[in-house]
Length: 316
Image (tube, rainbow, N blue to C red; front, side, top):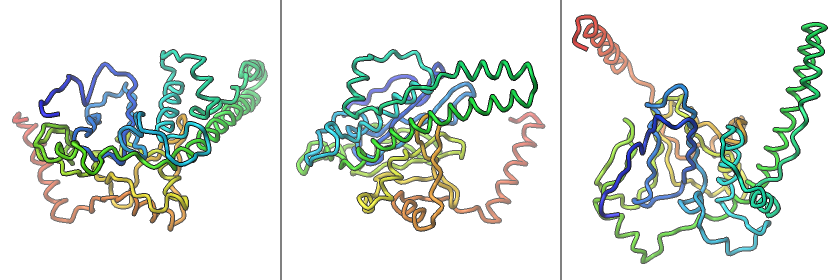
Protein backbone atom coordinates (compact mmCIF):
# COMPACT_ATOMS: atom_id res chain seq x y z
CA UNK A 1 0.00 0.00 0.00
CA UNK A 2 2.91 2.36 0.73
CA UNK A 3 5.12 1.34 -2.22
CA UNK A 4 3.41 2.15 -5.53
CA UNK A 5 3.21 -0.76 -7.96
CA UNK A 6 1.54 -0.94 -11.30
CA UNK A 7 1.04 -3.26 -14.23
CA UNK A 8 0.81 -2.54 -17.96
CA UNK A 9 -2.58 -2.16 -19.63
CA UNK A 10 -4.41 -1.37 -16.38
CA UNK A 11 -6.99 1.05 -17.79
CA UNK A 12 -6.97 -0.15 -21.39
CA UNK A 13 -5.88 -3.30 -23.22
CA UNK A 14 -6.12 -3.48 -27.02
CA UNK A 15 -6.01 -7.30 -27.00
CA UNK A 16 -9.22 -7.71 -24.96
CA UNK A 17 -12.29 -8.60 -27.02
CA UNK A 18 -14.95 -8.60 -24.26
CA UNK A 19 -14.43 -6.64 -21.03
CA UNK A 20 -16.74 -6.67 -18.01
CA UNK A 21 -16.11 -4.88 -14.71
CA UNK A 22 -18.25 -5.16 -11.56
CA UNK A 23 -17.75 -2.15 -9.26
CA UNK A 24 -18.70 -1.31 -5.67
CA UNK A 25 -20.94 1.73 -5.12
CA UNK A 26 -20.26 1.91 -1.38
CA UNK A 27 -16.49 1.34 -1.17
CA UNK A 28 -14.51 4.28 0.23
CA UNK A 29 -11.04 2.98 1.15
CA UNK A 30 -8.09 4.66 -0.56
CA UNK A 31 -6.34 1.41 -1.40
CA UNK A 32 -9.43 -0.03 -3.05
CA UNK A 33 -9.89 2.74 -5.61
CA UNK A 34 -10.70 0.86 -8.83
CA UNK A 35 -8.70 1.13 -12.02
CA UNK A 36 -11.45 1.94 -14.49
CA UNK A 37 -11.42 1.36 -18.21
CA UNK A 38 -10.43 4.35 -20.34
CA UNK A 39 -13.51 4.47 -22.58
CA UNK A 40 -11.95 7.10 -24.80
CA UNK A 41 -9.53 4.46 -26.15
CA UNK A 42 -12.03 1.67 -26.82
CA UNK A 43 -11.83 0.37 -30.40
CA UNK A 44 -14.98 -0.43 -32.44
CA UNK A 45 -14.38 -4.19 -32.24
CA UNK A 46 -14.22 -4.23 -28.42
CA UNK A 47 -17.25 -4.99 -26.24
CA UNK A 48 -16.90 -3.07 -22.97
CA UNK A 49 -19.24 -2.62 -20.00
CA UNK A 50 -18.73 -1.37 -16.43
CA UNK A 51 -21.55 -1.95 -13.95
CA UNK A 52 -21.93 -0.56 -10.42
CA UNK A 53 -23.50 -2.72 -7.68
CA UNK A 54 -24.61 -2.16 -4.09
CA UNK A 55 -21.95 -2.93 -1.50
CA UNK A 56 -18.28 -2.55 -0.72
CA UNK A 57 -15.32 -4.41 -2.21
CA UNK A 58 -15.94 -7.80 -0.58
CA UNK A 59 -19.70 -7.53 -1.20
CA UNK A 60 -19.14 -7.24 -4.94
CA UNK A 61 -16.07 -9.45 -5.35
CA UNK A 62 -16.98 -11.97 -2.65
CA UNK A 63 -15.49 -12.67 0.77
CA UNK A 64 -17.77 -10.65 3.07
CA UNK A 65 -19.04 -12.47 6.19
CA UNK A 66 -22.53 -13.99 5.89
CA UNK A 67 -25.47 -11.93 7.22
CA UNK A 68 -26.06 -12.15 10.97
CA UNK A 69 -29.84 -12.05 10.58
CA UNK A 70 -31.82 -15.05 9.22
CA UNK A 71 -32.34 -14.84 5.46
CA UNK A 72 -34.83 -16.23 2.97
CA UNK A 73 -32.23 -18.44 1.29
CA UNK A 74 -29.36 -20.36 2.90
CA UNK A 75 -26.52 -18.50 1.19
CA UNK A 76 -27.95 -15.01 0.71
CA UNK A 77 -25.24 -12.45 -0.09
CA UNK A 78 -24.74 -9.28 -2.11
CA UNK A 79 -21.94 -11.03 -4.00
CA UNK A 80 -24.49 -13.49 -5.43
CA UNK A 81 -25.84 -10.66 -7.60
CA UNK A 82 -22.47 -9.98 -9.21
CA UNK A 83 -21.73 -13.69 -9.59
CA UNK A 84 -25.00 -14.24 -11.43
CA UNK A 85 -24.30 -11.23 -13.63
CA UNK A 86 -20.80 -12.45 -14.50
CA UNK A 87 -22.01 -15.95 -15.40
CA UNK A 88 -24.81 -14.41 -17.46
CA UNK A 89 -22.30 -12.26 -19.34
CA UNK A 90 -20.13 -15.28 -20.12
CA UNK A 91 -23.14 -17.14 -21.52
CA UNK A 92 -24.57 -14.15 -23.36
CA UNK A 93 -21.31 -13.37 -25.12
CA UNK A 94 -20.53 -17.01 -25.96
CA UNK A 95 -17.12 -16.96 -24.29
CA UNK A 96 -14.99 -20.11 -24.26
CA UNK A 97 -15.00 -20.32 -20.45
CA UNK A 98 -15.86 -23.87 -19.35
CA UNK A 99 -17.93 -24.07 -16.15
CA UNK A 100 -17.91 -27.03 -13.76
CA UNK A 101 -21.32 -28.61 -14.33
CA UNK A 102 -21.59 -30.11 -10.83
CA UNK A 103 -20.67 -26.81 -9.17
CA UNK A 104 -23.18 -24.92 -11.31
CA UNK A 105 -25.92 -27.40 -10.42
CA UNK A 106 -25.13 -27.03 -6.71
CA UNK A 107 -25.16 -23.24 -6.92
CA UNK A 108 -28.53 -23.33 -8.65
CA UNK A 109 -29.90 -25.71 -6.03
CA UNK A 110 -28.80 -23.31 -3.25
CA UNK A 111 -30.25 -20.23 -5.07
CA UNK A 112 -26.82 -18.67 -5.55
CA UNK A 113 -27.40 -18.92 -9.30
CA UNK A 114 -30.84 -18.81 -10.90
CA UNK A 115 -32.51 -21.93 -12.27
CA UNK A 116 -32.55 -21.55 -16.01
CA UNK A 117 -35.58 -22.88 -17.91
CA UNK A 118 -34.85 -25.27 -20.75
CA UNK A 119 -34.11 -23.38 -23.94
CA UNK A 120 -36.77 -24.00 -26.60
CA UNK A 121 -35.83 -26.22 -29.50
CA UNK A 122 -35.54 -23.73 -32.33
CA UNK A 123 -34.77 -26.38 -34.94
CA UNK A 124 -38.46 -26.81 -35.75
CA UNK A 125 -38.76 -23.05 -36.25
CA UNK A 126 -35.78 -23.12 -38.62
CA UNK A 127 -37.49 -25.86 -40.62
CA UNK A 128 -40.73 -23.84 -40.70
CA UNK A 129 -38.82 -20.81 -41.99
CA UNK A 130 -37.12 -22.90 -44.68
CA UNK A 131 -40.42 -24.38 -45.83
CA UNK A 132 -42.20 -21.00 -45.77
CA UNK A 133 -39.39 -19.44 -47.79
CA UNK A 134 -40.22 -21.81 -50.62
CA UNK A 135 -43.85 -20.63 -50.63
CA UNK A 136 -43.84 -16.86 -50.14
CA UNK A 137 -42.03 -14.01 -48.40
CA UNK A 138 -45.14 -13.32 -46.31
CA UNK A 139 -45.18 -16.85 -44.87
CA UNK A 140 -41.44 -16.65 -44.28
CA UNK A 141 -41.93 -13.46 -42.25
CA UNK A 142 -44.71 -15.09 -40.18
CA UNK A 143 -42.50 -18.11 -39.42
CA UNK A 144 -39.59 -15.85 -38.51
CA UNK A 145 -41.81 -13.80 -36.16
CA UNK A 146 -42.95 -16.99 -34.43
CA UNK A 147 -39.34 -18.08 -33.84
CA UNK A 148 -38.40 -14.66 -32.44
CA UNK A 149 -41.35 -14.72 -30.03
CA UNK A 150 -40.29 -18.15 -28.74
CA UNK A 151 -36.74 -16.93 -28.09
CA UNK A 152 -37.98 -13.74 -26.39
CA UNK A 153 -40.35 -15.68 -24.14
CA UNK A 154 -37.45 -17.84 -22.97
CA UNK A 155 -35.30 -14.80 -22.22
CA UNK A 156 -38.15 -13.20 -20.24
CA UNK A 157 -38.29 -16.28 -18.00
CA UNK A 158 -34.55 -16.09 -17.44
CA UNK A 159 -34.82 -12.45 -16.39
CA UNK A 160 -37.76 -13.15 -14.08
CA UNK A 161 -35.94 -15.81 -12.03
CA UNK A 162 -32.69 -13.84 -11.80
CA UNK A 163 -34.56 -10.69 -10.74
CA UNK A 164 -36.39 -12.62 -8.02
CA UNK A 165 -33.09 -13.72 -6.46
CA UNK A 166 -31.58 -10.23 -6.87
CA UNK A 167 -34.43 -8.77 -4.81
CA UNK A 168 -33.57 -11.17 -1.97
CA UNK A 169 -29.79 -10.72 -2.01
CA UNK A 170 -29.80 -6.93 -2.41
CA UNK A 171 -31.41 -6.55 1.02
CA UNK A 172 -28.17 -7.68 2.68
CA UNK A 173 -26.36 -4.89 4.49
CA UNK A 174 -22.98 -3.95 2.95
CA UNK A 175 -20.04 -5.16 5.03
CA UNK A 176 -18.11 -2.28 6.60
CA UNK A 177 -14.49 -3.48 6.56
CA UNK A 178 -13.13 -0.40 8.37
CA UNK A 179 -13.77 -0.73 12.09
CA UNK A 180 -13.46 2.00 14.71
CA UNK A 181 -9.76 1.31 15.35
CA UNK A 182 -8.88 -0.24 12.00
CA UNK A 183 -5.36 0.27 10.58
CA UNK A 184 -7.07 0.96 7.24
CA UNK A 185 -7.85 4.43 8.62
CA UNK A 186 -4.14 5.28 8.77
CA UNK A 187 -3.87 4.66 5.02
CA UNK A 188 -6.62 7.23 4.46
CA UNK A 189 -4.18 9.86 5.76
CA UNK A 190 -1.12 8.66 3.82
CA UNK A 191 -0.08 10.40 0.55
CA UNK A 192 0.16 7.12 -1.38
CA UNK A 193 0.07 6.81 -5.15
CA UNK A 194 -3.25 5.47 -6.40
CA UNK A 195 -5.59 5.67 -9.39
CA UNK A 196 -7.93 8.65 -9.57
CA UNK A 197 -10.87 9.60 -11.74
CA UNK A 198 -11.36 13.14 -12.96
CA UNK A 199 -13.65 14.93 -15.37
CA UNK A 200 -10.82 14.69 -17.93
CA UNK A 201 -10.26 10.95 -17.57
CA UNK A 202 -8.18 8.55 -15.43
CA UNK A 203 -5.01 9.76 -13.74
CA UNK A 204 -3.03 9.17 -10.52
CA UNK A 205 -2.92 11.18 -7.30
CA UNK A 206 -0.93 11.46 -4.07
CA UNK A 207 -3.55 13.45 -2.17
CA UNK A 208 -4.76 11.59 0.96
CA UNK A 209 -8.21 10.08 0.51
CA UNK A 210 -9.67 10.95 3.95
CA UNK A 211 -12.37 8.27 3.48
CA UNK A 212 -13.85 10.01 0.45
CA UNK A 213 -16.47 8.06 -1.52
CA UNK A 214 -16.24 7.33 -5.23
CA UNK A 215 -16.98 9.74 -8.08
CA UNK A 216 -18.31 8.07 -11.23
CA UNK A 217 -17.36 10.24 -14.21
CA UNK A 218 -18.82 9.86 -17.67
CA UNK A 219 -16.89 11.52 -20.47
CA UNK A 220 -19.40 10.85 -23.28
CA UNK A 221 -23.04 9.76 -23.33
CA UNK A 222 -21.99 6.65 -25.26
CA UNK A 223 -19.66 5.42 -22.49
CA UNK A 224 -20.95 1.98 -21.37
CA UNK A 225 -21.24 2.80 -17.66
CA UNK A 226 -24.26 1.23 -15.94
CA UNK A 227 -25.97 0.91 -12.58
CA UNK A 228 -27.36 -2.56 -11.90
CA UNK A 229 -31.13 -3.00 -11.86
CA UNK A 230 -31.01 -4.53 -8.36
CA UNK A 231 -29.87 -1.16 -6.96
CA UNK A 232 -32.71 0.72 -8.65
CA UNK A 233 -35.27 -1.85 -7.50
CA UNK A 234 -33.96 -1.71 -3.92
CA UNK A 235 -34.08 2.08 -3.62
CA UNK A 236 -37.77 2.02 -4.60
CA UNK A 237 -38.73 -0.61 -1.99
CA UNK A 238 -39.75 0.22 1.61
CA UNK A 239 -36.63 -1.57 2.88
CA UNK A 240 -34.34 0.47 0.64
CA UNK A 241 -36.00 3.84 1.16
CA UNK A 242 -33.14 5.13 3.31
CA UNK A 243 -30.35 3.64 1.22
CA UNK A 244 -28.06 6.22 -0.35
CA UNK A 245 -25.25 4.71 -2.49
CA UNK A 246 -21.84 6.05 -1.54
CA UNK A 247 -20.81 7.04 -5.06
CA UNK A 248 -21.72 10.28 -6.83
CA UNK A 249 -22.45 10.36 -10.56
CA UNK A 250 -20.87 13.17 -12.58
CA UNK A 251 -20.61 14.21 -16.23
CA UNK A 252 -24.28 13.75 -17.15
CA UNK A 253 -26.31 16.39 -18.93
CA UNK A 254 -29.23 17.94 -17.04
CA UNK A 255 -31.94 15.33 -16.51
CA UNK A 256 -29.83 12.51 -17.99
CA UNK A 257 -29.43 9.28 -16.02
CA UNK A 258 -27.06 6.29 -16.28
CA UNK A 259 -28.21 3.20 -18.14
CA UNK A 260 -29.66 0.38 -16.07
CA UNK A 261 -28.00 -3.00 -16.56
CA UNK A 262 -30.34 -5.91 -16.19
CA UNK A 263 -30.20 -9.40 -17.64
CA UNK A 264 -28.72 -10.80 -20.87
CA UNK A 265 -29.00 -7.65 -22.93
CA UNK A 266 -32.28 -6.53 -21.33
CA UNK A 267 -32.27 -2.76 -20.70
CA UNK A 268 -34.48 -1.82 -17.78
CA UNK A 269 -36.21 1.54 -18.39
CA UNK A 270 -36.18 4.27 -15.77
CA UNK A 271 -39.49 4.66 -13.89
CA UNK A 272 -41.88 7.11 -15.51
CA UNK A 273 -43.57 8.10 -12.23
CA UNK A 274 -42.09 11.42 -11.11
CA UNK A 275 -41.91 10.51 -7.36
CA UNK A 276 -39.89 7.37 -8.20
CA UNK A 277 -37.53 9.24 -10.50
CA UNK A 278 -37.06 11.99 -7.91
CA UNK A 279 -36.28 9.41 -5.21
CA UNK A 280 -33.66 7.75 -7.42
CA UNK A 281 -32.04 11.03 -8.47
CA UNK A 282 -31.81 12.10 -4.82
CA UNK A 283 -30.37 8.79 -3.62
CA UNK A 284 -27.83 8.60 -6.45
CA UNK A 285 -26.55 12.15 -5.85
CA UNK A 286 -26.59 13.03 -9.54
CA UNK A 287 -24.24 15.90 -10.40
CA UNK A 288 -25.47 17.27 -13.70
CA UNK A 289 -23.54 19.48 -16.08
CA UNK A 290 -25.19 22.82 -16.63
CA UNK A 291 -25.88 23.83 -20.22
CA UNK A 292 -23.06 26.12 -21.44
CA UNK A 293 -23.88 29.80 -21.61
CA UNK A 294 -23.65 32.01 -24.69
CA UNK A 295 -20.08 33.11 -23.91
CA UNK A 296 -18.90 29.52 -23.43
CA UNK A 297 -20.51 28.42 -26.69
CA UNK A 298 -18.90 31.32 -28.58
CA UNK A 299 -15.52 30.49 -27.02
CA UNK A 300 -15.81 26.84 -28.06
CA UNK A 301 -16.79 27.92 -31.57
CA UNK A 302 -13.78 30.23 -31.90
CA UNK A 303 -11.46 27.50 -30.57
CA UNK A 304 -12.86 25.01 -33.07
CA UNK A 305 -12.43 27.44 -35.99
CA UNK A 306 -8.88 28.19 -34.85
CA UNK A 307 -8.05 24.48 -34.79
CA UNK A 308 -9.40 24.04 -38.31
CA UNK A 309 -7.34 26.97 -39.61
CA UNK A 310 -4.27 25.48 -37.92
CA UNK A 311 -4.86 22.19 -39.71
CA UNK A 312 -5.26 23.94 -43.08
CA UNK A 313 -2.00 25.86 -42.77
CA UNK A 314 -0.09 22.85 -41.47
CA UNK A 315 0.33 23.70 -37.77
CA UNK A 316 -1.65 20.68 -36.51
